Image (cartoon, each protein chain N blue to C red):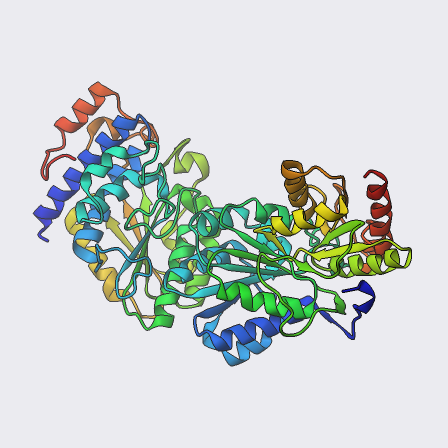
Length: 279
Length: 320
């Protein structure tokens, strides 16, 4: 897909996100908006996926969302990619919906392979899936996304040690490095320090990218693919802005987990062109 | 079927039964992947690793990561068997099991040794007495607690063949072997009747099944008709077996190497209270941590010996 087409898709995904959290008056728009370019590129350009969903994903690239609270983004991208009908996005967080507040396999929603929400677990799961691919002689790759605040969880670093020690080199992890979490900036809450140096010291191949510039996202993900299967796990430190695409949601951590009111929704949608038709 | 006929010819640790069982399962099914968090010798995994090195995942001392990796392995069709001590494989990683395994309904087998007081001298930090409760509370989870070496071997193979998240609990000490090596009638979810009786039902799991047998033998000598049930599967619980037995005996003693709160006894009590509230007494650890000591010293001090089962039987029969 051309960059312009990817941008159009990402813009529609952003409209979906703000509409979804508005209609249920809850959810996490900030990180969802910030990662919209990345996940759009991944599903529409980078990964080989089969929308006729099969849990084992044999012969496909796999994606695991560790920071499950950005579920509005995940659901929108899956629906727009064809895993289920876009009209189902309107059921987000409603009773009896397959689109739970945090992603789950429990309701049988196509495209979801693990529950996430309690943070820090997704990289481990992705490692397991990557090891299964190696055992199965499956040459496709495994991708995972984590938040930056999530890196405060200890399990992340258990996984980081393991993936390097065991040369899990069919794994590409992206960190949404937006410097923001619920209680404030990551620096204020519990400073992560030099993430580049940390992952490098843990034995990972480290890339950085501008997560809200589509050209750079596609370029860097392609670079990461080329660096796969060379003995090291790969991490992409993705610089994003929480709330990207909606002016009043940017430059603050306050939209991590709150929904816009009617007037705010109108203002947000006026900044996001309806490119593919609303659900 | 009389309890007097039950004897043992040999003693072995239940964890060795696991070691043989996982090796046999690994030989039969190429999707079986063994995992361990730096306790290979304690879990008796040496033969599996020797014969199937490519299907062994050593995570180091990182149990949370091990559970997550196990969940991921299932996605590619593997059957991961995650092993460590019971304390580290359940309580330490409860949230990982809850979200990535149980809620996600992944075919992960969590197989843990050194459960309960009988791990002995290491003391209370390692003697988990809450794991049955923790695991049986989780939706989707099957919980199996075999009673001896032979049954642990059979249970290991059975849980691997059956699809679904499962916790298998076993232990460290050498213990009498009194069930058959093959064709013992072991079936997940189906209680094993070791004797038929009409005066008292004793329901036990794990190491305490042998103590229930010894207690029953003594009670029989006193003219009491004892029905001993080996409830090796705590979840799904064989409700029909319980109701069938108490329908005759009208009273129950439960015996387990676990906290009274949340264990086998509570599971049985729930069945009685909803169906036919006959009196029940517990033989279990009563809201206490363990401590260092030999297994026998600890079982004595914490009231889990055959004489404690006999005392509980006398008490509950007086309440009929």
